[in-house]
Image (cartoon, rainbow, N blue to C red; front, side, top):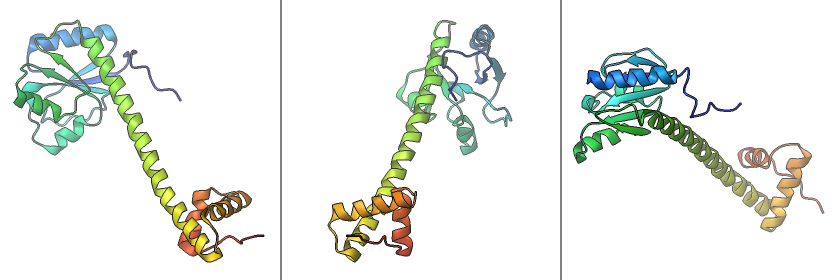
Length: 195
């Protein structure tokens, strides 16, 4: 299944927390042109809306309640920056924004910020999946190593021969090396050494 293109925004939904009415109007107009449904939101209010994106004005920061931060963490965040002071930027960085816009807003730049936010969010998700896979492989390598050591000790084999025995037995039993290694280490089910 292919993921939706970051460039295609029609049909998406965004939570919008903007204090200045002029900026809010610009965002609403751009969203209408792009086919995005904007839902006005004030941090602190409970909103039961599944959104694809959140735009949050830096004037609403800091978000003091963990529920608010958790709520925003469900989808990419675009921060609207009014000042570039270190303290304000620190508050914005706590949101881990996927993109940002500088106030006062103009219609130019909103589309780019949206595309960048969706693309960064997707790439981050893919990187997290890769990390999970690598961590699983690392854990399984430890199990395989433990099984190889157990087979080496019990059959008095060198490491290459012990691994070859495990691999051959796994193929015969139609299991992965990791599955067979887990059985060897958990239950001591050692493959029979031949030859």
